[in-house]
Picture: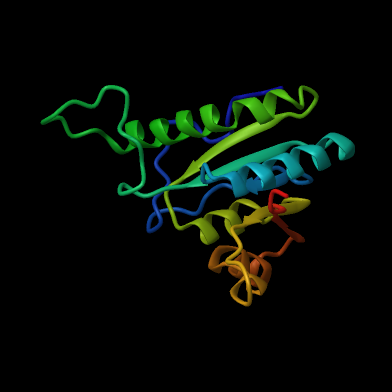
Length: 170
């Protein structure tokens, strides 16, 4: 199992300046925002990847507003873009460690992308075998609708998209 990303931790990926690097051809890309819905999507993606012998790329989109504080942050210090990016990547690795370790035969890459979630997932999955996203669901009539990210991914992605929905606990 690999925990090294193909995008160096300090490489800035800004929405304006660059497009996130695509995942390797044949990989399964999955979005993870730290929620239980994302855990379900990741578990599904890892299970598929294990069966298909495909690598998995776990993507977390971020902005300065959503990024955790870098490890060296202190009051009055302005962290660099690279430090924020590494903090997001470290949080992603920590948040997904238990699920990833349950699939030791699957090669995993982690991407912290400074862009909106739908754009990040669509761009990274350009050459992927499949994109897997979770659906938060809204319950009742609204629950029949997809969320904005899963909706954009199903409409705009060039690879197949699997939208997972966590079953309610019974």
